[in-house]
Image (tube, rainbow, N blue to C red; front, top):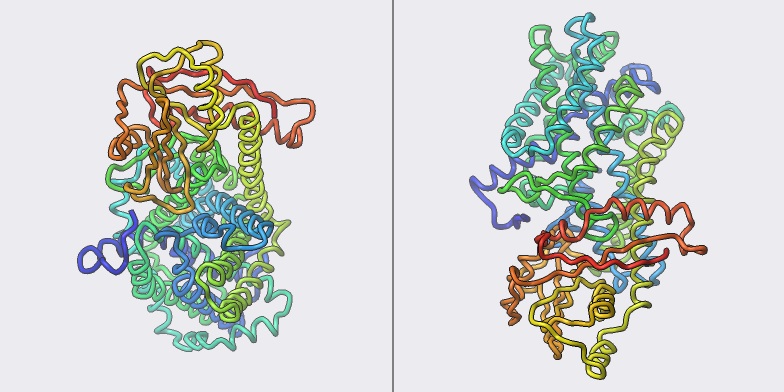
Length: 628
C-alpha cells in the first residue's frame, strides 16, 4: 500500500523509516565490502598512492551525492506512477498521447522494458557478490577457513531461496534494526581511521577526482567501473518508493545511510593512506582482531538482507509484467497477510537460485564477480534518465530546455560509468546483458504471440452487435442460469461461446461477457473498477479495470458488479473458458523458433481458472484450435 508522504509523522514515520533502511538500502549499504577493494586490488586495480586514494574517494563521494542524493532522491522520485516507482512503472507513464510519433513511443516502451529485464541479471549477481564478499571475511580470522568460503556461501544462498516460499514477514521485522546496527558500525569503523588520518577529508573536493581521471587516463577511466559499485542499489531506492513513500526514504538516506557510507569509505581511504600494504581487503582491515568474528556474522546478515530485497524486487517485477501482458500467468503466492508487497513467484525463485549459485561456482571470488556487476545497473540508470526526460517534458509540461539541461547533467554522470562498465564486457559483464536480453526476448515473444492469437480470435468470431442481430434473427433455446465468458476485448464474442452454441444449440438465460483490463496505473480505486452494462436479450457486459500492481479475483469482481446493479451469484454461475490448442502453421507470423518458444510458454502458463480463483467445479472448458 502506498502511503502518502505528507500524512505520515511521529511513530509511523519512524517505523516506516526503519523498515525502509532494512529493505531499500540493503544493496547500496553493503557496497563498502568490495568497492574499495576492487578499485585498488581488483583485476583492474590501480596503485594505492596518496593521489589515487584521494582521487577514488572523491569520485565515490560525488557519485553518491550526484547519482543518489540529487538525481534519484531529488528528481527521479518525483516521477511516480500513482505513488509507485521503478523503471516498469515509469515506462507505463509513457502513453501514445504523450509521445508522438507512435513509433517513438513504442521504442521508448521497448527500452523501458529492456531496462526492467536487466534487473533480473542484477537480482542474480547481487546475492552472489554480496554474500560471497561477506563470507570471504573468514579468511581474515584464520587462513584455515578459506576452503570453506564457497561451500558456506552456497549453503547460505540455497537456504535463502528455499525459505522464500515461507515468507519473510517474521524475519523481516529484524531487517531494519540489523541494518541500523550495520550502518552504525560502518560509521564507527570509518571515524576510528579518519581521526588518525584527517587529511583524507580533502577528498570531498571534486578536483581530486578530476585530477585522478586526467592523470591516469585510460586506466583511471576503467577504474570508474569499480567506483560505480558504490552506487549499485540506487535503482532499488526508486523501485521501493511505493512501499514506503518518498519522505521516509529521503529522511533515512540523509540522516543514516549517506553519512555512514561516506564515513566508512573515507575510513578505508585513511587506512590506505597510512598503511597501503594492509589493504588487500580494506573493509575488513578496519576491523580490530577481537571483533572480526562478530563482524563477519553481521556482514553476512546484512548481505542476506540486501539479497532478500533484490529477490523480492524480482518477484514484484514479474507480477507487474504478468499483469501488463509481458509474461505468461504464474502462480503468485502472498506470504504475508499484513504486507501486500511480500509475494512469492516459484519459477522466478528457482531460476534466480540456480543462476546465483552458478555464478558463485563459476566466478569463485567476489573480485571476479565484480567484473560482471555494474553494467546492468548503469544501463538501467541511462534508460531511467531518458524516460525521465520524456515524462518531464511531455507529461508534466516542463520547458524542454529545462528538462534537457537537467537530463544532460544526468547523462554526463551516467555515460562515463556505463562506458567504464562496458569495458568489462569480456570479463563477465556480458552475463547481465545476456540475462536481460533473454528475458526481453521472452517478454516480446509472449506479447507478440498474444496479439497474433487475439487477431485470429477476432477473425473467427462475430462482433457483439453482429451476435445480437444473429440471436434476434435465429434465437436459440435458452436455459435458466448464468454463464460467464472471459473475453479478450469489450466488443468481441469469445470463441468458447460460439463453439458451445454451435455444438450444444443452447444459450443460458443470462450471459455475461467479462473483460479484464490492466491499466497503466498501479491500482484502480474500487468505485472505478467496474463498468457494467445491460445489453438486452439477457446479455450483460462487465469491464473490470485493474492496476498492474493488483491481482484480479472473480469473487471481488462479482461483489463490485452487484453494486452496479447486476445480480450475479458467484455460487450459481458457470464459467466457460476457452482451452486453446495451438500449433504452428506453414507460414507463421513470427519466426518459427519464436513460435516454438511461445508454444512452450503457453503450455506452461497457469490456467485462467486458477489464476483468477474460479472454483474448478464451476468451470467448463471449450477447446479451440488455432495456428500461429
